[in-house]
Image 1: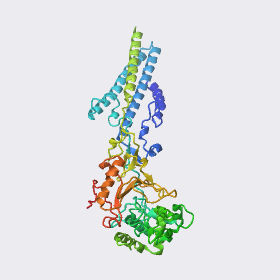
Image 2 (image 1 turned 120 degrees about the vertical axis):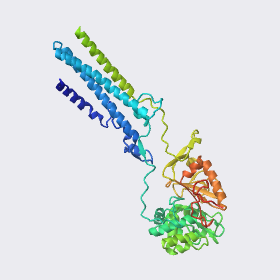
Image 3 (image 1 turned 180 degrees about the horizontal axis):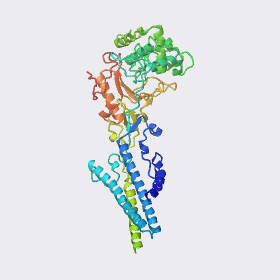
Image 4 (image 1 turned 60 degrees about the vertical axis):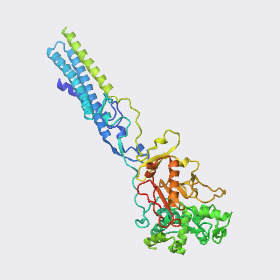
Length: 330
Length: 189
């Protein structure tokens, strides 16, 4: 008779064990979908990147395993009782078979009670150990620490720190970053790209130095016009290149595009003695161009090529710009 | 008679099993899911003072790599985009240029300071434009508190650079002066 039970158990196992995999089944997946922390949709949810399943997932998985085992047990018990009943009724003349069937039914009933009692005992013990409180009541014990709807994955505090750029940025001394300040004029990568937009190729070291200078000249581009604008100074843009005295520095494609013109800017035509001529359209377009990082970086690259970094240390208040230059080897 | 007894045992057993199955499935059912608050992902700010309103909110990164929810200052009527530098917004002050339409964009008026936000970095920059720096910084702080709708703790969590240039104050130029109520802030005379 025990041998006869084996096919039933075998069929039951073949039927239900595969269903315990990840796919949604009558019992639900053993590992909850929300614990699949590498799911692509979850990765798209924002800049917090999911990493790994947390303790709640472990408990939920254990709970699911228990539920699955109990469900399988009950199915086996039902099949056993059915088998015993059939055997009992079809073998009414065979006392031995009847006795075996009766015994089988009794064992099945006892097994049912044991299985369900075990489930309740685990639930009770876990809740007592975790001091879940009276409000929890009956129900899956895993809910104590991992209530439904709660996040089930550890979350990184933010996106991974980007790798350092190809440009080595100064550290310490008068320049300790940060790069992400102002309009980006303190970011050597953007400075180099901006100069390239105007047709100038500058070295990484020079980009570093210019980015350093922008911090002291314009708070990284957050101030466009010099404090003495209109009082003898025509310095403008993140690198404070003179629109009047260094007008040629603005004659490049990046500045034309920023100004919205197709030809020469001739910025010096808009100034008299370093001061802007009131109402001059030339001044307007040149100031507009100088505010653009690409244009200003290109103008700075032109100054660097024609005058060197010395152009930034003529003002008495340029000690820190000099530090940038000295550190950069300029 | 004996058959009836056996049928009775069989029926009771089946009934017990049925009750057990029903009890199991009733108890294993996840209880009615209570309304669970969303995960707290902004550890440094308490935006409760702005949540009840319908003011649009925006999530911005914090200095420690996290994020904080503040009032959506980009949708403020006084915030302007720096069209010459895409992704840069002026919350206060002016980029000091005029467009081809002769329109000269300007954000909220704030004497002595420009405040800009760079979306590429998620960072605020407060450029102090005049002495005394302490007064200019104080006005900028009040402006940020009002505009961003957060408290001092929330502001301190943000990525904010407060600085000035060499022509305003050579000594403090290039230094992140910080907000006066935040740890590590430079005490200004």
